[in-house]
Image (cartoon, rainbow, N blue to C red):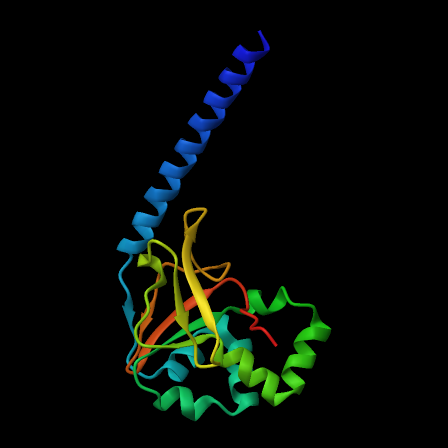
Length: 174
């Protein structure tokens, strides 16, 4: 009798798993089909024009990276939103912002050379960043992810690269 219950429970769990996976695949397919928006200007201009990126813009200015990001060619920026920064305890955020070297490492960890579309990588892949470390792209829970941060489906193509809004700040190894 216990074996029958175990088999029934396992079958039910598998059915829910496959149903959830099917829904996640549909959601991801819709995400991949979302067109990339074109912005007339560079990556810094796009960030300045996006209210959800005001904390990131402040960090870029504090690190003095605005000219480098505006003039770099063919880069991809994984842009944490203001909500992403709010997830970090205030004292840690303050410490990062107070140290230009640490801030620069954190910010350049969010930039990869080349045009990267994290929505299309299957299986998981590793990509280098300008900090000298790597990020990983994979799919989980119906979302494309960079490291473990969910990627917004709507990318932004600028004059000098791509911008993808992400839900978490990526923290490199120190």
